[in-house]
Amino acid sequence: MISTLFFQIAWNPSAILPILMVLGADMLRRSQSVPGVAPFSIGWLEFLLDLLARGRSTLPVESPCMVINARSGYARTNRSAVLEHLLRSHNTTPTRGGLTITFLYTSQRPGGPGSDIVSYTALATVILQLAAAGVLPILGIGSDHILAVTASGTILSTAAGLLLRRQQQRELCTAREVPAARRDVVCITSGNGSAEAIVVVNEGGGVRIEDLAAGRAGQLGVAASLGVGVLVVLWAAVLLALTALEPVDAWCVLALCGAGTAYTAYAARKWRGGAVLGFKFAEERKTVVRADKVMEVLMKAEELETGVGSALLPVFFPGALRPEEELWWTERKEALKATKSLKM
Picture 1 (cartoon, rainbow, N blue to C red):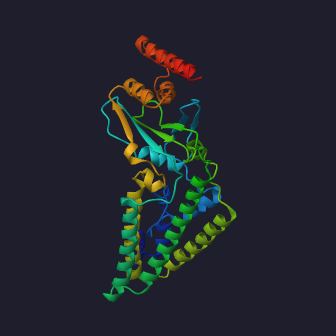
Picture 2 (picture 1 turned 60 degrees about the vertical axis):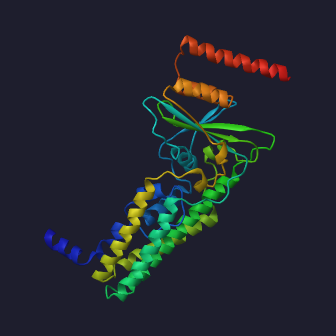
Picture 3 (picture 1 turned 90 degrees about the vertical axis):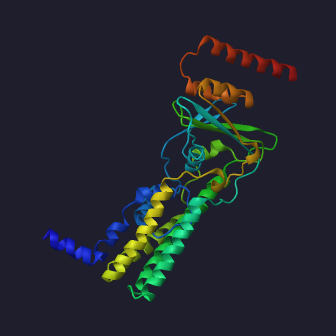
């Protein structure tokens, strides 16, 4: 009986295609943490239903990190996938026990998202899928149903990706702007034991990173919820159409969907940089502080941007410091107090 069922599925996979299409939502969720043009792949129906159930377009962060204000020392847990990507995209390969801190400077609000190898690969995959779906019937393989299903899936995937991109841009736009006369310095780190941290310096005009970290702007509005609901209905219709495909058509659709799923797996493993996220950092001012000793890095960071080392010190060294280290930080604080007194 089992062998007969296997033979039937192998002969015509259209019976299990709808089941396969609802798998892979976790992988899709990770790849769409930075949304955009997306090829026809598995997992979309479950993914969209999850968005409706949660009522939020912002996706859960994979690895929580801390956002620390260098002036006040106040730390909060990051709930923004955008900031998670910003931190992870600066991953380096430090020596054992080392730390790398990257300083990023901006004075502009985030704009439209840029492009990178991941977005170009998505576009190439879409073109490949549609071209193959159009050529196969010409070669006498399958029917026009292959192109109809593939094009429908591609349109729905891209529509969902662009809807999520619009929501993500809305999140960036609703964050408060740093006043022109103010300098906002914020540290982002995974905490003690991590090998990297970034420091975003807003010199007036940029957005408050702490607002983004709070993740309060990710609610799905009425229009967005309706849009997601329509996509759910249309995806359900596509899945129903899959059950009526002829064996050759079903195999071709499965292969083309597999190409899109391969892209999804690739994108899910990539962390996207600041330009792709919409940030406008001054690349010529980007500064990287790296050393084998964490304390040495914190001291250099403090000298580069006052308050950064002090804010990160209790994170990486929650216990007592060595006498010479304690002396250095004490003298640093006293020197800063003296400088402020002279200015007053």
